[in-house]
Image 1 (spheres, rainbow over the protein chains, first blue to last red):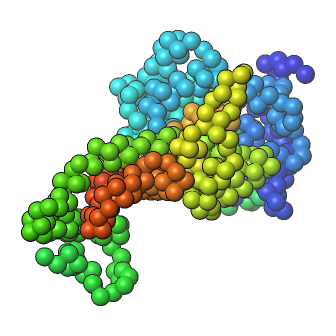
Image 2: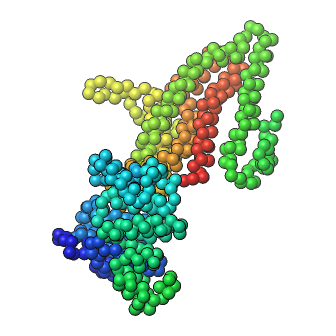
Image 3: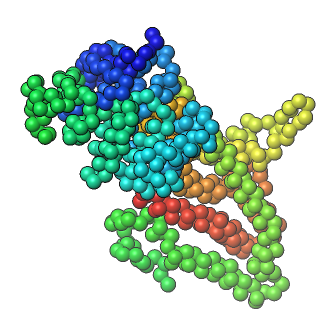
Amino acid sequence: MTWTPDQPIVSLKDVRKSFGTVEVLSGITLDVMKGEVICIIGPSGSGKSTLIRCINALNDIQAGSITVEGLEVNDPKLDKLSLRKKVGMVFQQYNLFPHKTVLQNVMMAPIKVLRQNRTEVEDRARALIAKVRLNGKEDAYPGELSGGQQQRVAIARSLAMNPDVMLFDEVTAALDPETVKEVLTTIKDLAAEGMTCILVTHEMGFAREIADCVYFTDRGVIVESGPPATFFDNAQDPRTQQFLSQIL
Amino acid sequence: MRPNAPVRGHMAVLHPMRIRSDALPLADRMFNVWTAAALVLALAAVLIAPAFAQDAAPEKRSIIAILLEWTPTLAGGFGFNVLISILSMAIGTILGVGLGVLQVSPIRPIRSVAWLITQFFRNSPWLVLLFYCILLIPFQIEVFGTKIPFPGWIKAVIGLSLPVMAYMSEYIRGAILSIPTGQWESAESLGFSRRQIMTGIILPQTVKRVLPSWMNLYAVLTMATPLVSIIGVSDVMALTRAALSAEGRVDLLIPMYLYILSWFFIYCYPISAVTRLLERKYSVKL
């Protein structure tokens, strides 16, 4: 199946995933169109992170199907590299390579994985570092940066691979409140440029501001979804209402 | 001077074990400046006292003169010990890193075999391994008609590199497993292959963690090199024995062995001192 931009860029159909006997995802169906920004919210343990990790095959699934630009993610014959060129991911714990400088962190994958020309990659990497507002930090090591700065390097590192979809897994959850904003601004810039973004987040204000569609998950299923205005102000399901009343 | 005096805090001399655990490593408290000074004094006393005693009997050469006379020969032997230790360490390290990586292979049979090899050589007496290498490795091999000799000392290098390999394998395995899984996941999501992640991201990060143990292993290995004298390699120990029998003097035994001991101490002590420094440095931030 060849993918055309009028089809969903990421499509999940009845995805089921268990860890041992515990079913974490109990039939998730979800479509994301190119350029869309979707936010997944829900109580902890509801499977949000597992869901997003399944999209770039960090976790496998037991049933259902996930496609990214027509690529069947759970196909055992899938060349993982072709998937990972399309999907970038940013983690809660940044996971920068501590023995490499900021510039090296950003340059490493395009050079080693995509085998691109070093000087071209360096130009692009410097531009990306400037884009996440970290000019002057090129030669710093991750350990010398604040959490928010590290997270922005992690975003730049993912972008260096020119992905079509970006996954953000609770990227501000480990940050100090004052550095959350700088990371959210970076993501907002990205979304404004038309990057397809799938976010797992606890930042309700941010979700409301940025998302095209908000999904509420609980106990492995999507309970409710909709555009942020209707979702936040006019939630239908009692579970959603209860969650929102606790968090807002 | 009382070398056993409690120089730090409440270290009770009469207690056979630590009664208070404080932040300093045990080795640090055992090898403090005072004990080192005491050791040097004891060494000097043993060397000098008989020398004075010799003045009464002028027909015998002084022990110091004999030691100095033999020093170039013994130094050559000691150099051989150092050479053997460096070569064994190099070979053992290279093989050990490979074996350690195989110990975390996702393929179960590979993992099991690597584990077995590691455990086997880690739990074998070094001397027995040396004997095995002497007996099993031919004294020469033929490659394309040219005979390549395998002298005893090369067999000894191989024999000593086996336990080094096994220890190294365990250090590397432990260090790899101590790297947060997030490193693997983020590298994987950037498209790196397993091999690329291992060589470019994980192994470089293990260097810092393994370095203190690695240096300690080198010091232990160096101190084990006199074992090769038993299998007929002319190291410092074998030469000392030869010198002693050539001189045929009983009063030379203790000073000469002490002399050799002090060489090992002077060579190995700085290594363990730096090791402790590194351990302390890295134990704070990881």
